Amino acid sequence: MEPEIIRIREIKPVLTEYISKSRELLKRSAVPDDDAVHDIRVFMKKTRAILRLTGTLMENDLYDRDLKSLKMVGQIMSKWRDTSVQRKTLRDLRKKYRHVFSKLESNEKITNLIRKPVKAEEPDEEKKAGVAEIDDLLNKTYFRIRFYQMQTINQSDLILNLEQSFENVRKIYLECRNQVMPEQVHEFRKRSKDLLYQLYFFRSLNPAVIKSVEKRLERMTMNLGKYNDLYQLLDAIGYVYPGQSNIPAMDELAIRIRDKQDLYLSKTWSDAYKCFLPGTKLADLLGITIFIIEKPQS
Image (cartoon, rainbow, N blue to C red; front, side):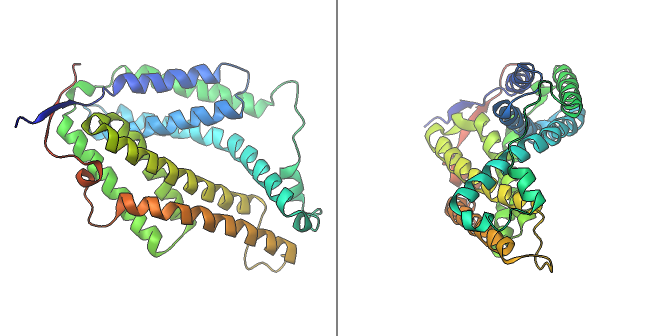
């Protein structure tokens, strides 16, 4: 039986599309709204995942500069996004635990965070400067992508890089299951998202199975993201344990938040186990046997 010939999706057009769509979203208004911020940040994560997959295989080092630029875009936007998410999360908690929040009315960090911001007629100077910097970073990145030497990438090497990405995530998963630490859980989420976005280019190897794996990774990273949001919330409201100044209501709120974190982790581990069980090979997970990889036309 002849091996099946598979063609991996071309990468460079997708890269330029992600940057172009991000620039379009950025220019829709003076300052992007919450939905636009979310979408741009996702495009940045997808683009960085591609660069981590392909960068070492290209004949130039532009990718390293662009990794830093796109990470900076995410960092500028993260503050805008985090404040909005934390406000919504606190309000949801207040609806459910009003007796706790009634005892925390004097906590300035909580009251300031939960209060709906006054909508200004014009965006503040800090946000305007942030938008200008993001636009500049995206513009320069889009320009540099034109010089990427992606036609030189060997497809077999690309698969080897995907396997390395998979092994890296599995290593972090095992570390997290043996000792849960917020920083490591956050790293597990980031590298799992890399793998998720990288798999997009390999769907043709086994479409049904790979799409199923992608859905599992999407559920997993969504729950890990909610866990991390709650961790960031605890930091934003200034909760420290042990803390001499903590009142019982603050400790109770922290417990409620920890309970939600435990719930999201419990939803994570089943999917993670199916993806990253020690001893599992990437080829086994994706149901791949023997293929001839056809090199895309440059």
